[in-house]
Length: 116
Image (tube, rainbow, N blue to C red; front, side, top):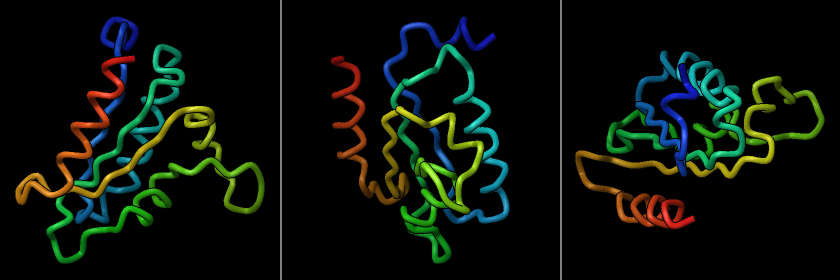
């Protein structure tokens, strides 16, 4: 099914609610399941941690850690989910769609990938 929807794409945009800590593990699992599809190999990934305006919103570093967005070659933190991002460009931004925070860099990121 994914092959039909993913032909010719230049980027993957994955949006999470950075204030909903209970659903982060599910979001991470869904993301890495999506990234394991052969049609999406090496397609750049943009993760948007929305709702940064909320009091308990995670920081970008916390999102990167909890969503397994860093590829670590060795050590106790090595996780099989990391294979889905090996060699892939990964960017993560903390945003607030409500307050229009950090939207310009995202648009620039998307435009740059669309031109490739």
